[in-house]
Length: 236
Length: 202
Image (cartoon, rainbow over all chains, first blue to last red; front, side):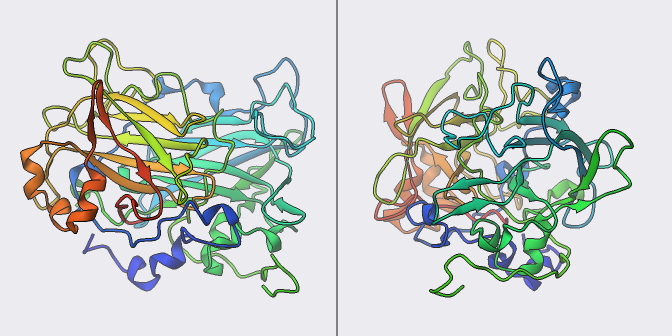
């Protein structure tokens, strides 16, 4: 952890990641540690992690629109990007798991009480592996915004949840991808909990006309950089 | 943000700076995407010496979290890390996966089936006591919480570099307690009983 190049030093952790306690997001009040984190010695448990192979997945796992008997409702989109580490090296063959609300802003979840329709042709969850160069690609439906009870008239900007493993336990990342120009950004304490404005913008995808497919789907690009201050020792 | 306009953050059109992608909360709606059958089986059902590791995730008032996700990662009994695919398949017979994932139930409980790993060294080669790496994710956590489970009665605990660096009253939060079917380990997110949480870099 001591010989990492400058990123961490130039930009304190507090600015890279949201704090545990962010009172505007009221659920953090009782779900954030009150004592300082302890830095463990970089051990082999943190420097390793699960490995993945094509046998873990089915090809259709990366298309959230093909699991019903008809077409999923909403704006069909392709979400793609590249997963790299903080030195710019691709992270190949790593698992990317996604989940999201449907076009109406409703999750397939027993606890989602938003009175918006479910879509029997949209599953809301997908998985894929990055390829040898770190690229991933999903086909899905653009999610809708949805209300929550954090504060009066609170709405989450449209987002897709991402879960990644990288190469090591210390590279694990769970995050959310947003869409450019969302009018709800200004009132969302989850998005704004990333206090550094330019770091926060890393959560916003870019419209990508190069991936937009004629007569089929619009494209968005969301590149992901995994950190984990413990570089894997065998990388050199 | 001002008092007259709560929840109003400035939005400008700056471009993103290069760097790691920030964390965001797992939220409450991950259950159809992340947990899976056999997720809590770090080892197969016929693994010799296998036991249960179970416990609760509790908030700052001691209320269990019914919507948390817990993941384990560990070495096997010989200190080897599993290096074959198969995350979504339950380990066969006496197999070993090293990874486990379990959502908490209505009482905040999680449950894994695993074995005691051999102690694995630090990157510098310093011996460490046997331990399991733990991640906890939940609504209301903007990032994961990371901790380690150590085992009671383990002589190597006395010289483990992490345990050794902690004040005595906090060290015990990382050591599981014995149960008839294995070990118990509760995660206290906040307060007097607060578990020691680790900074692993991001």
